[in-house]
Image (cartoon, rainbow, N blue to C red):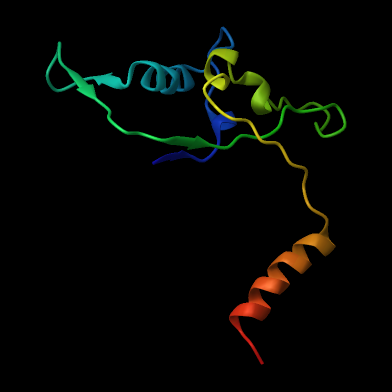
Length: 110
């Protein structure tokens, strides 16, 4: 299992591409990497599962004035097509209190 914490943190180049994410896409599609130690050889990846997270695409309401926030908008469709995308909103303070309060209450009974 390969877990990528935040796709949206990859640096964009001058053309608006994210080379690091294109490398991830190539790994997913071809299941191998070029060997840097032995030129001409490939390293095969077998039974790999990739899981990733990303910020949602920014909206004008969430973007601070004068700040460029790329969010998931910078992630290419060529890469996104390989993932099941699940989106959820930020829970309220009461919901977070209920969730973690239930966990703590179960872990630390009276």
